[in-house]
Figure 1 (cartoon, helix red, strand yellow):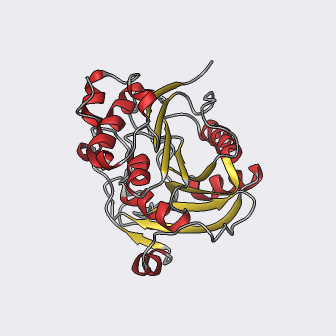
Figure 2 (cartoon, helix red, strand yellow):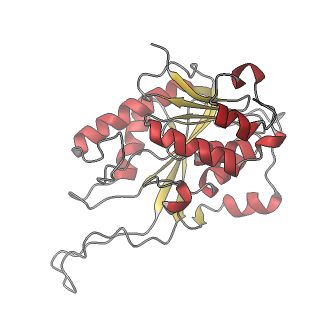
Figure 3 (tube, one colour):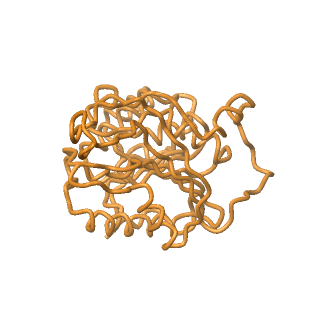
Length: 281
């Protein structure tokens, strides 16, 4: 069964479908994947059980990472935003475990960026208070694993748009910027800020490249892709989050200066047509 194209434009596409079943993304067609999958921390998503066993979570991760591997071009890259570790329901080394899974699938490891979002509010316990008996150590950081498919070096003939200052700052693997609050993400419970995909896109892809997020959520990756002259594709299983992403894409991108595919315009709701093209009836 063909997937549901929720929103279609010349430079972006939102697919309202399961990451495991969609056929809307051709094999070996993607230059860069930037994503943050569910963390399995019992976050209250609309259409995903975020409280499964750790073994089930690793199986889930293997399945979606395998799909991503197939979608990437031979020189394609993956920027994977995940926790360093977790202590809810037992201590687990998420970063190390997902790196191991990715390498078994065929990904090559390049580097790890530490994202210091300064968020200590996720602490769930202190362990043994002021005692060496059983304290918990929780770092208020997340990881961005940088992986690639077959070869790291890309064709230098394509256009880069990163500035000297950005390159100097971002090749330092400690990034410090705040996380995304729910209000700014339309109420999505676990959105990442646009700044995260923006940096990954400008550092690891060329102008005009195809950027995919298989867990689009509130749309941050497509917003960053469109605003930086890449083609953005997002897969999102939940229809409600697709609506949130649509609103954010319309409000946070300069679509008036982008060329929208005219033959797809009539397929969109009239309200959406007016928002993108005020002359549409």
